[in-house]
Image 1 (cartoon, rainbow, N blue to C red):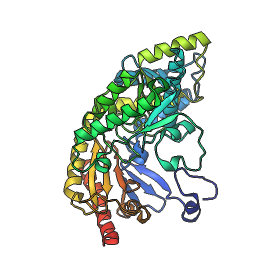
Image 2 (image 1 turned 45 degrees about the horizontal axis):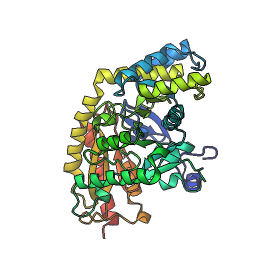
Image 3 (image 1 turned 180 degrees about the vertical axis):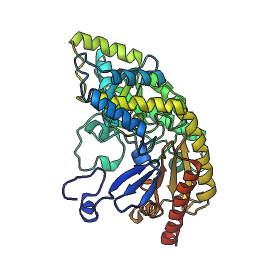
Image 4 (image 1 turned 90 degrees about the horizontal axis):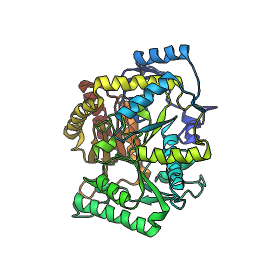
Length: 445
């Protein structure tokens, strides 16, 4: 409380209340300093796909620490774990001729994709193509560029971010933004028309790329209407604009396929990966780049004499070794199939257990990833007054009932480890159901 300035936290409240100190991981459970045990339904922050303690990964990390604890990948250096992990990523990637640029976080991966998009257009003699299309409600990280790409107001307010040529398309959230009587197909038509209008107004010759999460995670676990991404891809190709897929949450089986772009029917020019890449055990991430983009960038870097981008810990041998072993584990488990199987069970349980709650407006998601929209009135889809902080109340009550979830405003998100069993899913949904009953007692007029 005296020294740690926490992320995404109210610092004044932190000074008074202090943190929840987690001291131990046991599979899908975490334990606090008082011995309270919680079933972790969020994988920490969307990432602990293999739970919170894994002996196989611990042994790999320890062995690598004893062999080569640190080294860099600047100036034509590399190491065996680095070669291992990039080869596995390229084998799994849906992008043709993938090249893998290793970094340390999803924010750095998204920053890297934007820099590569600018570099690519300079190399093609199109320096005016600098603007990046993002979407309202998106989250793409906390670095200066990552925060600018995000469409969440609290990530911008008071930071005095510089002008970074980011423009925002509409959030594809049919439940909240569909018009009365409008079909999802018509809503998708409207979103595509809005994107076309945005590109026309800004000038396609000024736009380098569009970045999008297949499922918007921190924006509320928002899934797009059917056909959205294939149509987005067609529009961008026609206007010579790169499509960048932020796979930080959706990647590595979460959406029911290896990558979210596969679940929603598109192939990006680049994608960012993190979180599930190491099951959150060590900090590692990457930008995955298509061959035609890479070749153009490589020619330009050769002309200059060096590619002037990178990080001290890119390709760190310990993080690379752990991530490589994580990917081997996923492949042995057939993680996409497991995600689909567990996801079917999770959504069935949510539908039968909580869909009838007067506060549950919509249950949505993909694969083993779910979002629960809380509303004051289901018939009119009317939201709660923000000052009530109903979602935060439900999150606290879930903890009281022994389960961890996350609220983004009045959306409850669930992103469990893939090692979760069906009885544990029952336990997770039971805790959410009990917390919702508490909320109805507290807030129902």
